[in-house]
Length: 370
Ligand SMILES: *Cc1c(COP(=O)(O)O)cnc(C)c1O
Figure (cartoon, rainbow, N blue to C red):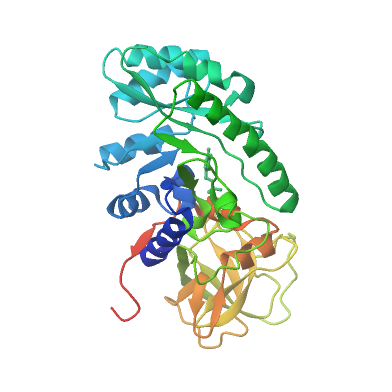
């Protein structure tokens, strides 16, 4: 998998422009949305990001071990008794209930500990309910070593109806922030919107945005991004090798099994060293996926655990060792993540999640003429 460093830099700059005076917190959860968390984290650290946000404890620990020194905040993903250990590794926990506060207070006796409070303003996932949020924040006042660095919520949406819902819920969260302020509590970081709110340009009285999708050039909405100039896909290619070519005999017996890896076909088929175990999908969906061999489309016939069989009828010049472009550009043609999402009836992010952590991610830093 090729990751385009320049695209991430460009996306980050576009996010910065849209965020205006607000801080930009980068969401690197789920292996940086499948793009390889360590390389992405290092890149963002070099860009001077305020902090990295993830819900994956193991990945957060791995970043620290690899020397990433930037602020890392955990969205969640652990039980309260893990909090002292997180603190010991300089990871900032999120708390959203009394048990979390108690564990954080205990950890803060060893060393000063900043925490974030996550509020459920309506999404119905993780967070202290809006009605109990003020009391939870107040309960941390005066606890030795403990400091509420931030208060945040998450209100993602994918369409117009979702946006109307998010705007109503946002009003409740902003009311909470005003109530806290009236009590003399003004956390350093307050954050409401992620990619969808930022893209929609929604009003915001907080001082930060926490962005994932747009950083990677992914659309947070149900439709693909229209801002192709502003945001570029960070994953610029998925490539594998053609390891075998088979010239089937004509009039061969038809296959006895339905899946079909080329048996019973006349013509040329090829085998790619990339299979379901690597995240490759296809062959049984509503549409037939395609890959590019020497810039020519080769339909996917079948995907097995470690190999994919493609139809090479149209690729007369294909040779063993050829690069096969599963995603990306070749010749005049290009296959996109959106194409794969359409073929598989899923989303670009789900396509990335299937490949996530299974492919060697190469960060391409050179420019077109470099
Ligand atoms: C994932 C996540 C974000 C980032 O959302 P995007 O839509 O990817 O920008 C922000 N906040 C929380 C709490 C999240 O879990």
